[in-house]
Image (cartoon, rainbow over all chains, first blue to last red; front, side, top):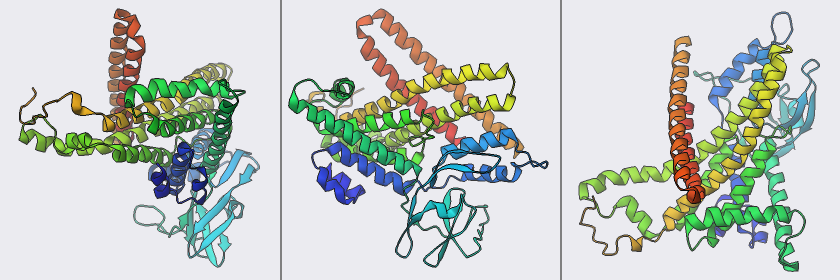
Length: 394
Length: 66
């Protein structure tokens, strides 16, 4: 697992933490997440553009529906500015800017405050950058954005390694996990019982070990415990933070779930034994034409499993956030005494369901990762002892 | 544009119907299993959640394709 972290991360300080495999995996996820959070989402961008034009109606008042939609879409996106809330009337934002780290003819580090929420062009060392729909583009001094034939900005984009809102939250959760789990580990030196918050964590750790890792992976489960525990707690804490008014939506970002699923994929492929590869490329116990047909399907299956992990977590969390926020938004849209309490009730109902989903998704991700690892390391010697491939099993 | 959007929504509706039907079948089968063998409830529940998650994954993938 050390090599995995080295491959993805390249962070200097991972070496200091060699005893804690799960932290390394986490950091690897983080780095992947950071590099991919800047993937543009064309659909959202297009809709967004439309709304910006229509948002202020002719009388100067803001259309509530448009505003609610825009607010939800902003919530789902990553941003360079940690915004707690904005005053729609005065246009004031309450929050703090985050550092922007660009790699464009040398490293450039500056505060995202210079963009003034996309209203101004930032000049850094003779280059001009503009924030356009939450992405940084390189522009001329006036901040002109040119478009290609599909309506997407054609401006060059610098390499972006910024500490965005999602990255900040991931770092905070990483540090929090480092702190609570090292204190849990330390408390075992003093006695058999953990102290303080460790008493909450111990049953959860045992749950992951006894109900997820052991039955699905088998006897070599210890090797993968670090990864499974990290993924479980990382996703769960992030999902729960998404339920707070902090406006966190990290697991609802496809780049983050992509990085997490990629780590699972790599671990599965690297820990696979020869039976796994044999079952993929030359399935034993089948006639030859069938083997030829099955090989590409099985190869595809290698990729669809982590792909499904990625989509499942991303879609569940995004859908949950959208539902809760839409129901809350409906109160503001209807503005009367019947709809208000009704939608408040729906919101609370969905919120409680989302608390369940937050746990369930962390559980499912860990469980399926364990299942895939288990498939890859499974010892097949017991079900075809003779290993006679020519006899079809029908 | 308008027409294409409506077709998309019908597709999304069909996906939801399919997923709902599938989840219902999984749930009913698991319930029956637990009722027949209450001591195997834990194992049945885990298997049920795995299948439900797989089904959900397919449904979400289809929804995003829409």
